[in-house]
Image 1 (cartoon, rainbow, N blue to C red):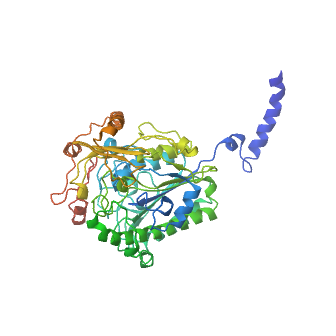
Image 2 (image 1 turned 135 degrees about the vertical axis):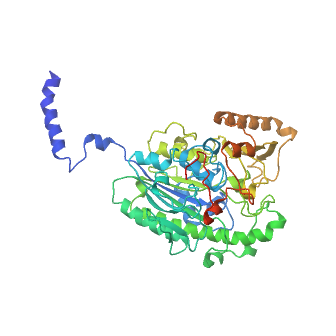
Amino acid sequence: MKITAIRPIALVISFTLLSCKDKVKTVEQQDEPTKPNIVYILTDQWRGAALGYAGDPNVKTPHLDALAKEAVNFTNAVSVTPVCTPHRASLLTGKYPITTGMFLNDLYMPAEELTMAEIFKAEGYNTAYWGKWHLDGHGRSAYTPKERRQGFDYWKALECSHDYNKMPYYDNDNPEVKYWGKYSPFAIVEDANTYLEKQAKDDTPFLAVVSIATPHFPQGSAPQKYKDMYPPESLILNPNVSPKFEARSREELQGYYAHATATDEAIGLLLKQMDALGLNENTIVVFSSDHGEMMGAHDVRPFQKQVAWDESIRVPFLIKYPGIDKQKGVTVNAPINTPDILPSLLGLSNIKIPDGIEGEDLSELIKNPDPEVDREALVMNVAPFAGGYPNLPYRAIRTKQYTYARTTEGPSMFFDNVTDPYQQNNLLGKPEFETLQNELDAKLNKKLAQLGDEFKSRDYYLKKYNYVFSKNKPAIPYWEFNNGKGEVQSPIPVTQ
């Protein structure tokens, strides 16, 4: 009887809601959580320690320092393979380089891979990308058509260039190359700010990746007014910088810090625009980098990465998200690894994580940051190339306190990064640390077993994927595309 009595009332209510559908949302729509926007700021070669908030005594990064006070700071974020293409492929797929085959620069990431942009597009997001791409493998200056943009629709990007004062790019579906009209970090942010202004008027959520190529070398091209802020003789070098590289490191650091400060200013303009448009309340903001830079530490010349030292693998990672409150400014010492980023963003966005993603969803740790939590992050260099070619392949784990690494010839690194932050005291083979070393070795083996990583030689993996280095330089010969002789190399062969 109750059901029969209520039914006419329910019909009236339903009719009323339907008749007013243009004015108010239905109850079901009101209960549906709003999907957060995502702005991912990806820089290039920015060391995790080279920021004011991270304690660098030289560099001035006031805008990122301010962001750190509003965000969760992962102090031991690492790059899964500290070089451009492998990091970017892992970021977009949530997979390890050993799984995708994307462990060298200048490879083409197969269209078969499910990517960040494709996942968010399927959830109704607009997608946009600016700046350095380095995943297309058709030459560094080639046009990237829409079908090779891995799900990104709005497109102001180029495969790879570090000519910051005359940086080329392609404007969406126009195959004619254009050039940014000013120092590229500022030019890219200007365009991104215009995009944000349009998106702020739209109810559709968006994913915007702002890929800025600084502070990657060349350092001499940094704007002079920022270089003037860093006289080489005034710079404080880390104690692990080799004496033979001191002079060069000072010279390069002048431009490196200049790029960093200029880029910080550009990022500040982006963050200011978001605030002015009222986007902060429902936007996840990430600031990070693809890898670091050795800059003369441990007797490794400037510009080098790929190795397992902290200067190379440790990157900044700040994340701010809707509803952040008491978590502002809290640090997480447990490392976040590149494959963890995509599933964590999906977790924060209440989007189901697809099968096949190998990274861990750390969204709960992000929402409830705890400096005491620990975990292991697996770092690898499957096949060192170019400047890193003389080095052996390695696998390593990074925890909040320790770095432990093995090459194909055996254990190579064991550092307590808390008591020895510049990694100058290798603990390998010391009797008092034997038990701990064995524990770390077992954890590394467990990580490798989880991935089915056999940890074989460089030649094994090059042969497995039919990758061919140049006869003159041990790297994928991307420069051959400039004279019409380039060949696309990819984990899944492509028809050219």
